[in-house]
Image (cartoon, rainbow, N blue to C red; front, side):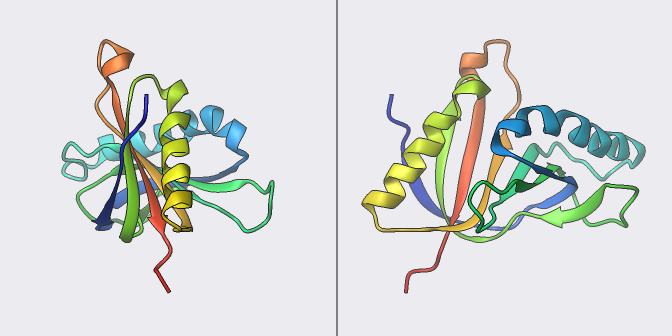
Length: 156
């Protein structure tokens, strides 16, 4: 199945986040404890969360094989003073390639591959930041939506 890719101008989204460095194959085991700390803070602050989604931001390094800087976060209503490891952050803004993955998380690589193919065929380059916006879980994992956003370098 081909995942459609669209170009959107995305606005920043406010997050409560915890940072971790992780190799791409370690992200699956790193996010749970990190986002758990975020939810612990959110539950203690009425009004900070108003239905926002989990959003995981990845900042790529220029060194091949280097770990990613990951921000495991939850969309919140505003900024706040850092508490322990949880701090206020934002997603980047600008022109981005966007794909919506429908199905189990283990198959999200299809959406990433579609974005990579779109960038290659449209002579576009990533700006080094991507993020995943997790939709609400569904009883059937095949119906769960995750939006993949890849910030694009400005055209020269």
